[in-house]
Amino acid sequence: MEWKLERLSVPKVRREEQVMWESIMKSFGRDYRRSRKSDLQRISKTPDFGKTSYSKFKRSILRRRTCKVPVASSPVTTRWHSHQTQNLDNTFCHGSTELSFSSSEDHCVTPEQLALLPYLTDVSSTSDSKPSTSDDAPPQSLTKKSIRKCLHQSKLTIVHPQALLGSIEEHKRGLPKQQDPNIQICDGHTCTIRGCQNKTKICDHSSDTNIQPEIKLHVTGLRNDYYLNLLDWSSENLVAIGLKSVTYIWNGESNIVTQSLHLDSPSTYVSSVSWMSGGTCLAIGTSDGEVQLWDIETQKRLRNMLGHMSVVGALSWNQHILSSGSRLGHIHHHDVRVAQHKMGTLRHQQGICSLKWSPSEKYLASGSSDGHLNIWPYDPGSIKLNTPLQNILHPTAVKAMNWCPWLSDTLAVGGGMRDGQIRIWDTSSGKNTNSINTTSQICSILWLPKTRELATSHGTPRNQVTVWKYPTLLKRTDKYDHKGRVLYLELSPDQNRIFSAAANETAAIWKYQE
Image 1 (cartoon, rainbow, N blue to C red):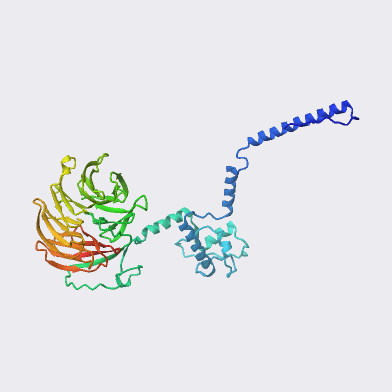
Image 2: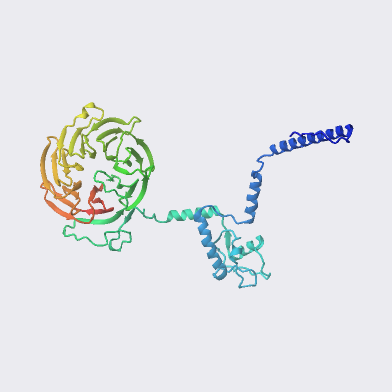
């Protein structure tokens, strides 16, 4: 700070007085600057100037904790504390446990006073002695001594909030697991689920009692897409079903959802699922071209395998080799044991609808949306895979396709909406051994080894499940328990139940007997 000194222009002031005045002003300016500088230095050395220091913050917290009752941070505990406060209030006023302050029998603890009490809970007492009475006058306010005395008389004890929270968690673990909202059991005409179409019973004229619906389910979020494969039943009796961006694991023994596997983005949806044979490893294809591997026992994602540029609509395992097909017509072979997983690529002109390795593990059948059925040999690392062993043309997309379990070279194929034919192929010779027209779209096809029969699921106009005798292909029975086209059929590992899922977001588990 600079001081501008102006000389006095008064002529009567003597030179000595003017010099003295100038020296006083200069001295004052020096003192002011020195004091100002020292103040700034002192302020700059003060930690967190203008902010609340940690010591002040800690003292305020400790001061508040000594004045108020500690409350656990868990919302469950907080709600319990509010509910328990009301119960204790009623207990102190009207309950059987008498918490009295001396001779005043109608004295009641008010909510304001009760808010100062810690957590209370009943404890069992082995003695039959009655609570001792006191002749002292009732206290006007609750002190530590009076609280301790009341607790002793009423056989109550103080419980630490963390111990209370632990007991609540133990109680929660003992409760039965609630149903997942996206997969719920339907109660038929008494079902309260919104939009339930099973309240009006569908007329079933079939007299066959060997196949009966055991459980009906609501599967919210099942995509009505003919070209996806969203259902698979493992050898460990676990059903995987893809609903939007989540894959749910349904336990076939307890009939509940045990796990849910979520994709990273809700805008990405599950497009295919497939279990590894003889294990708990699940492969999931996604709409953005990823193939994910999940370990169900540890509930962890093992790896992401990239390479596709479009929807992965079909998956099939051959031991440690996983084959995946996309809508761009590419089939990738992945060796899941190694880091460089991609082993080879096969190509169709149009999108892949279905992939199935044969029971002998020697051949791979692939169907595309342009009606081509290709049979490929098992040699994932060879360049000869670019040429299939058989190429069979169909009038519509090859989606419903399955190998016969007891005839290794026999393949059943179901036609689409403009076809409706069931064709039985001998893949070794490429000949059609038998066929029949069903007059409806075939969405899925399933072999039934116990009875040596064939089951098909259909779309419009009747949305039925049909069982055919093999090899004559004579119709045995029709089941009409779905109101949407039945997109998927899967057989349980014990071959006694069939899981069907329809486009109207309903599913059924059928009891299948010989």
